[in-house]
Amino acid sequence: MTITEQLHEVLGSRCVEYEPMAKHTNFRIGGPAKWFTDVRTLEELQRVLSIAKEHQIKIFVFGGGSNLLFSDEGFDGIVIKMAMRTYEIQGTQVRADSGVLSSALARATAMLGLKGFQWAITLPGTIGGGVRGNAGCFGGEMKDHLVSVQVLRENQIIELTQNDLQFGYRESAIKHSTDIVLSATFELEEGDVTELKMELDDKLMKRKISQPLGAGSAGCMFKNYEIQSDEELQRLMTKLDIPSEMQSRRQLSAGWLIDNLDLKGKKIGDAQVSEVHGNFVVNTGSATADEVMQLVALIKTRARNEYGILLQEEIMYVGF
Image (cartoon, rainbow, N blue to C red; front, side, top):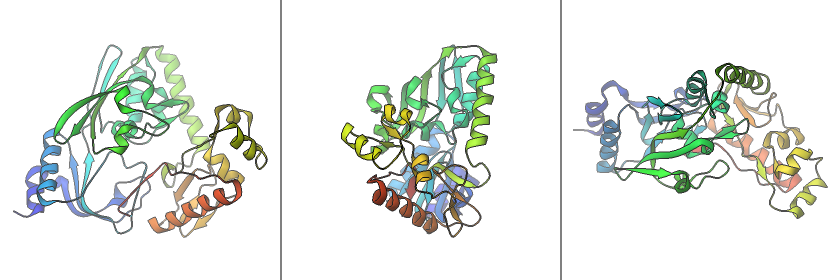
């Protein structure tokens, strides 16, 4: 049997050859995956991984496609979309498959009067990707109420505690491993349903006002910049009028930095720095990955040359 035949035997029509990744990412950019697969059970995942191992084929595993930039050439291997999407809520404990949308879990828990995950109502992407990158917004992060994570490691199911995951700002141990997140368990708190619903609405309204929602985007392009020492803070304050809140947090908003560089609206081809939020690069039509990369390089060069700041991407590049 050919590789395609083997994959079709496992997944049927949920395996597609030469599928444009632009159809599966929020950026709406990306060339074809040689094989695109949609896995819905652990057994399907294990069988697809076994086929990849047998034929020594590269794999890439993803969830919602919200913080990815695929190359224009695509991916010469098997792309695996994690489409396990069940969750269970028992008392204040919540277990969710990796393919569950973070925003859907935020709404479901709030509607049951559970507090602690409402910050994620505006978070694009899935629980698996969110755990991997310790995603966060509105002052919340995935690690805050996380108890444990189940991962697939060399075909074995392993349970990891929060300590095992070594969370940091947009960081976890999973980012530096080949582990595949299967599910996550959270411990939330009892809250008032009415108050929680109001908080969801408030956060959605803030997002509508402050972020570009129409065009394709991978969300925040860069991590906020973490100031390493008092000396560095003093140096930066000679170049920038840093708000007191950022001084006390020892963290500069990447969007604020890009605003100060006067790059809002800067365009290369159809890739543009959003005029609404400086840390968003948007696809205004038919942007290519190459155009986005050129724009990213320009922003990083300006930040380095003018402020001595090395901005780091929050998004993940695939196929480059």
